[in-house]
Length: 305
Image (cartoon, rainbow, N blue to C red):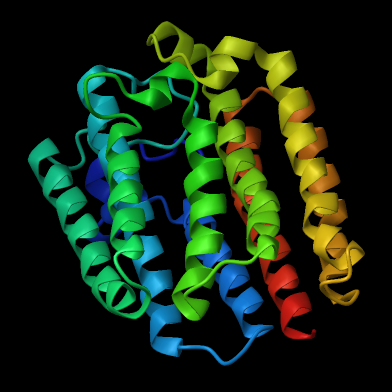
């Protein structure tokens, strides 16, 4: 997500700026971070296939961008993105890009992800084809299709599954062609922090989503309970990430993630005490930064084993 809704004059934006808005660059750490963790975990076992790493990272980025574009297109069609939104402008609903162009860009992004996946399928087998297909389908059905699950409160579960469990274990699998329990355990904190980004987004948009009939988890739980959920999932990420070290699989270096606790604490405080769009837009960017910093430090900790 980009900053607050300040794009009042679409004519002042270049084509590149408009497409950057559509791609939502501040959500992209959620795509790259799990690939870093899964690959670093594979490093602790043996040498890496660097082509597979690059293909996995690019594929994840293209799936994320495709999902964002699909969301932009589908929300506009369903009338969920209105001028009342506290978040940044959406290019389809805001009239910055014709819907057909957004849809074409969605298909192009997913097609690029498929091309990245070709090498991964060759290396790791058809299981990667299933993972890639499921990821793309889940991205489209998040706000598209006859019954988008993002409108029914399952968005956070989708993010936890595909940007945590699937992405970390899949990145490990393409390197080792096998899975270890540590991959599943480390996928949990990554998925939790990715889900936290969406929780902030849905807390910000709670009232407008409710009026639009979009029953996100925040709408279902209410603001107070959603804030508590946010604090809980961010907090749980820390002991979950340290569990393999505590059980003897790694040394103490993964504890570098504890350096991000001040960022997490400040973020929890902000989300728990603010409702205005600019502050929560900033919190959204900081939530993405928290996940990236957490995963980079965890990656470094794993590489130092």
